[in-house]
Figure (cartoon, rainbow, N blue to C red):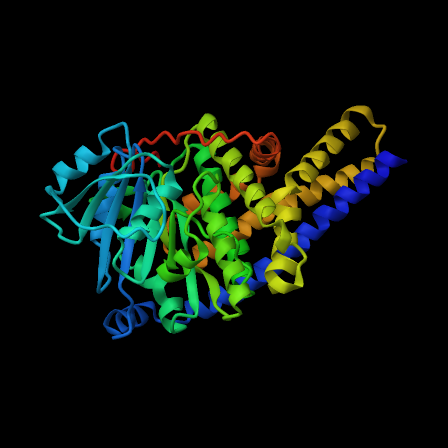
Length: 468
């Protein structure tokens, strides 16, 4: 009897998740339909020549990024934007990251006073490119990604900064796109996140994507599907109601003044990206300024995805631990009407569905397995639960793929779209259970206060990677 009740409770939970995903699909369709009717080229040119366009400092924290940093920097140099500077922060790398940059971009050492708005590890040296005078290299003692970004903020001269991972590639119009809501709102939008896609398999030359392909390894292709679902559905929906708690550190823009006032990035926190966004929301509600954090759905940033189970496990374990850590650090905001929709809706959603939802989902899988092998459980409930999990994990992923194909030109080959859709239908049976286990591992690491960052092993992005 008790076991049957547990099965029904799990089924009800999954039903709520499906309901929220239906809302997300509806919201995403409405938002993308509106954007599809706009003439992007006209908007880009309008903002490019607009006298109110804001100058931006682009910050690239780099630790042992010798494999991909040159391609990433080329993509930043190629950006179409009226006024910007690029600051690579070498966070005490033990490889040749700094030496490669100094040699490739003919950098010379310069001497400039770096303000101390935020406390960071010691600065070692500052270099400027002779080929591209707007490109700088800041070398410092190792302090982690958050500390490196804080050092970059201190050096930045402009009122907005864009953070991008050292292994990422930006489309040439990406900065214009992500700055649109900030410019259009006259500064009321204080942070904006861009859409992030998987770059593995794409043909890349001098920081630009020459041809879109897919990396024909199931583990990487499933991450393509997963990213599409997260960005095309979840974040579009949350952004519509100003409830975005996560904007990817791979590509995001912030008001420098707001971030300094919020205390900057938090060193020692695993999920420094989410932590900063939550701190910004808390500051906004405290000041009652009505400012917003938005997500920009256009595909603008391409990043290297883990190609092995070992590295993917590290990444997902870290993401899960970082999410729970930020929610716990700001637990006073949960169900607190003082923080509006962030406290009353966003925090409960993230606690229930993104945080501890992995435990409930895993219980659902275990229930199905026991029902199949013992026959002692409610088989009807188990069958319904299995169908619900397939709908949740696979069908909505397929919707995301089709919406992406409708609104973008990233995957133009029918064979690519068909391959990804078919693979999405298998997610429930192998990929989803794996990521659930890793997410739960992250939860237990948080409970044990075990801080394990793990290092992302890069293969680099460029030619010769395609397996299509």
